[in-house]
Length: 208
Image (tube, rainbow, N blue to C red; front, side):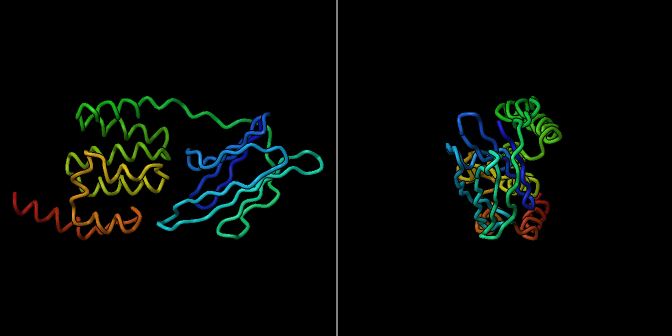
């Protein structure tokens, strides 16, 4: 098996193949392309970076010495060329029991315990978008506006696979009804208006 990791800004691209010629490309922990090849192929995928859609092409090839090589292009510009792919396998991540415990507490609406466990889970894997998503759910139910929006932003920043969940999950209803959500949605969940959140929170304090 061969394995290689490439960093392009905040985007982490992992490539590995096996003895059957099955090639897999993983972006920030999520599979974005999977193909079978003997002599090489092209993997096409898009990544949201700072709110913008970025097009990548990862090309695999084999030289005369049977060395597997990679070329990487970002929006048509070369990032890497003839990068050797070394023998080895993708490192296994340690089991994140804190994440599982946090999600379990969240489902039972034990929100303080859920947030504490999910924060511990980030110490193990700060690139896991699902942890940020579930933190957003807990903060939304607690009506912690700023923390909720920031957790959602980080979930998408870390390549949350299904952003439709932001629009449909029951626990996020509070955030969706907030005045700042429309702008957040229009930015592809990349930014939100902190002034709007501050005004809303101040109004609630005055009402109380």
